[in-house]
Length: 430
Image (cartoon, rainbow, N blue to C red; front, side):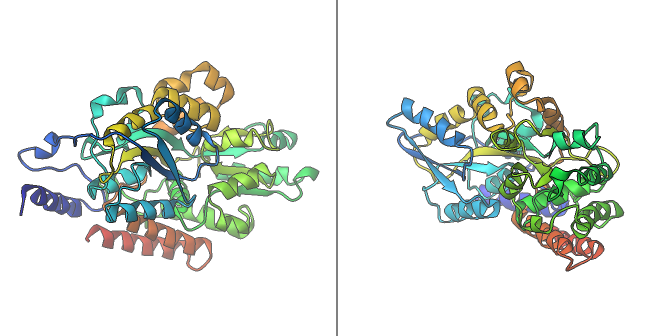
């Protein structure tokens, strides 16, 4: 047994003892903290694997790189829009040690999982301006205190709402609680132009978006999925209040039945076409909604909660380098280009993607274009991350399974949370 294998087994034992949470662990000689980044050699064409881009900005930025680097062109491989399918394709690529994907656009919560399996390379932290970025965002790019990815954009869930209709219905401010949101919908529903509108939607299909929406509901009602020590603690009265809000909203029509099939894009399209008064979604929606029939008729506010402002789930994407890729010198340079402040400014300006750079939230030109930036920054700084767990795929699948069963009426909220607690505890002992 070599030293590396010994360290991995030692780390695994600590992870199991700690429950679900991924901890920073190393050997007594502190060898983990002294691990060196791999050498980055080879130049030539590379690929960039990411979700399908509805904004067109990803290809725009890649085209800019390609114009300046004709011998080191980047090919954009667009993966399915479904987050679970994206993750699965990336894992399949890694498990076969394929070099088809060079740079990966990872959901922020995947960084630890991909690093732990040695599917991505450790990166030279000193070569990236991490000190200029929001700290919670940078932390999503680390594993065992080492950098394995670079923040591209962050994300905080926000509430889009039809400000024109609220004003006409006599509602003077965005709701800060779920009850206020439902009361506002009741007033708007009396307007002739709102006859066929539904109140609220988020992302409720059985995929990663459901994990996010379930987590936000639980956290916004004072509950948690895992406690401060990383142990499952979801079978609680507080968590039940959060899940009950979603379940009861489907029952009473606050959330339309068809929203059980919604991912981000379906919700965006419903809001833009005038079918919803309120929508929970990510910042990227803003730029596209401004080009739709609701342009100038909507605004953005923090998520509401049970008794006050709700808690967003910390989202975002990081870029990472496949351990099996070729032309890694080119890849590293492209990652610096793609995550630079100039690129972040472009993604914010053209696609309303939340930048990792602190200074852009105070840029007056950007604030004028996106007035909600200050609220978004606050949302990100106070967001609750999804559990960074050893077996994240299994954990998120369990969350989706039980939450979906409750929303569909196949289980009560109490039973779903009890079963979820049991499943998460089983994962903690594997």
